[in-house]
Length: 394
Image (cartoon, rainbow, N blue to C red; front, side, top):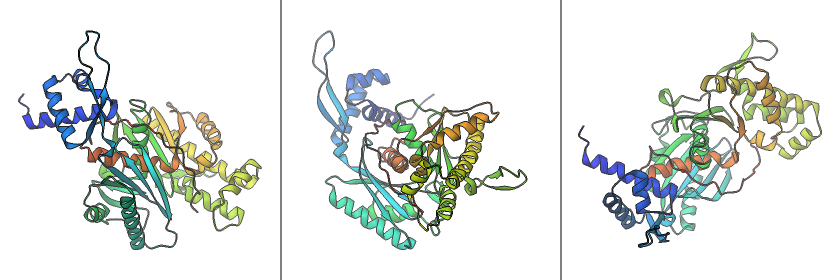
């Protein structure tokens, strides 16, 4: 079989860069051994990357047992530029700057309560420009995450009015002349778990995101599974039998979404806004009304997770939900309900380490892959940023 020389060269370049991102600091000779490529090929690619400024040399490693020169070590040049990850939520947008090695900086959260979509987009643009003015390096790309169905960088369905069929990628790509990646929040969270948990930890995982909608991001054999026109994981619209009258059905969103649960809590507390401190206080005080609402939530969530576990048999199911981050004790009840169900496969149920930033960091990984032209290759980042807690939206 004859392989086009240019395509083969491009593949080699990608693999060399992947080695430097994942294993740096690393020497050319080590890259050559890892990839089974001859040293001349690796040196040529290395020189091109160095000339471009995408990598930098960081001193010398240890010489071999036979002596000789100490090898020059290379790292990804994080000063080459940065990316911005932005999530557009129901009543706020959040923004995170990330270096090319995945290290996150400058988290921002902006309320958009009672603000129309056009004004929200203007606010996002202003914050991007402010971020650009505050940093010494250049903006390389943008990612946007939202509740909805995304396919081929287009919004086919959205929880927020006005976003469906709006070409968000072109809108901001034209303004800032950088590549733009769109993704739904659940897929971003799944990417985060794959890329920031350690190489090979999760080859098959499902990240269930509970916000205005209940969605699942699916990783199979290390790759994001999108399904038909990006519709994989849209579980919030699936019917779920009533706990007491099985002939009655409502959607998963009705029983499990954060919006529905918080509305019930606010109604019992007779409040028009969410008070996370009171929720926590009432829970610890064993207020029966709150415990009943949370028990219903735990029961129906367990039914959803059991179906996912049986259907997909993932290595793990990770839950991204601010309500569970506020009340992690609920996981015992969820696991208890799952254990009572007669299903063949019960995957480990875990809470994501950082519900507020997980999707942002997953979005950052997606645009870093695009910027480095490594869309189809695994990149492994270190999650060094502390958890950011924030008020749950009402």
